[in-house]
Image 1 (cartoon, rainbow, N blue to C red):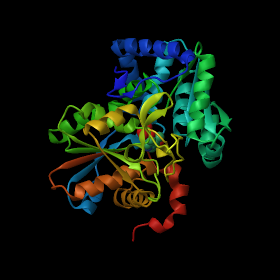
Image 2: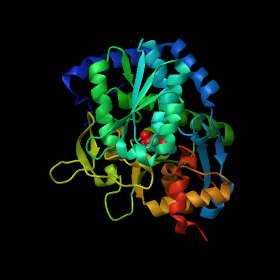
Image 3: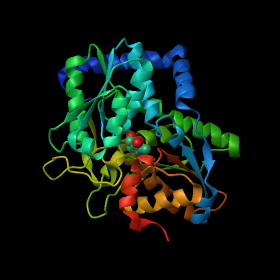
Image 4: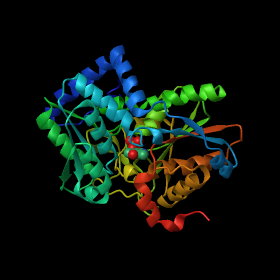
Amino acid sequence: MPRRFGAFGGAYVPETLVPALAELERAWRSARRDPGFRSELRRWSRQLGGRPTPLYPAENFSRRGGGAEIWLKREDLLHGGAHKFNNALGQGLLARRMGKRRLIAETGAGQHGVATAMIGAALGLPTEVYMGRVDIERQAPNVQRMELLGATVHPVTAGRRTLKEAINAALRDWIGSVETTHYVLGSAVGPHPFPSMVCDFQSVIGREIVAQSRALWGRAPDLAVACVGGGSNAIGTFHPLLRTPVELLGVEAGGRGDGVGASSLTQGRPGILHGAYTYVLQDAEGQVRDTESVSAGLDYAAVGPEHAMLRASGRVRYVSVRDDQALRAFHWLAEDEGILPALEPSHALFAALREARRRPRRSRVVVTLSGRGDKDLEVVLQHGSHRPR
Ligand SMILES: *Cc1c(COP(=O)(O)O)cnc(C)c1O
């Protein structure tokens, strides 16, 4: 488990957290070698999560591109409706193995908070979720879900009262509670060992893509595409493919197209946020900039450090897709395939279609459909004018 990814990563944290991170790393190293833990993780993934998720040929959507075949990795069919389950389950089982009696989490749009609340309930671990006051107002249904699942939601009123401040509040709680508490960080971000550990739990996505594509057509896909917020569904998709010739494309949120959106890899500079050295959207003084995206799940000013390395090495290409383009792709998939995608992977769908258009019919593009769109209906309906004619 690397501490650093080239120049990126590390653990820039207050001294009080160093022992907790070391304990977590030790526990995770021992768990991942333990066949008992691995089989327990597989069993819960199957019986509660619904894994493996299908690899689905989106034939009508592919026809719209008129080039390569587009296949969807259906993480939207996972329990809770998004890939976040993979990480929350893995960390929940690890917390139980470590003898922790309480889970805490941060959440932006509420998706990771809901996933952690589900796992907390299933494993019998009381769960408390930090959420910015602004997000609580914007995402009321997810707050209600968390509470129905038995979790406590703590409003965070510092700063801009969104995800960045919620992570700070969760880290502060953890500093005072590490003996009894595990902090379930929601993406492949933050200090070591979180980026590597979250990547491990999400890599089930890429491993299944490898096995399923081999069974379906006898070889790996030509291109894999995933959206990048913090970068967990993308790194989980890419990691098992890094040593193969498969082309990899990460898609960031470009917002309205008149600012930085939430494109830390294409618009940011190296800096430190939440304990990791990585690409950060910052102004000339190094202050973290405000982000904006139609998809709450991509709205984060930094990105996991492994993506920073993969960008630097050129192994993965990163592009940015605007709000209006993602909304168009949302409607295309809904009408072509009868699937309502979340707005986050709608960014990846738009980029995938653009790529497929340029490729021959016999090539194959896999897109990770990281979540379902039910949570986004209100936003989509507000933007009714993007509906395709
Ligand atoms: C949270 C979320 C994302 C973004 O998170 P990553 O860590 O970048 O994967 C993407 N899609 C969905 C559906 C989400 O809920």
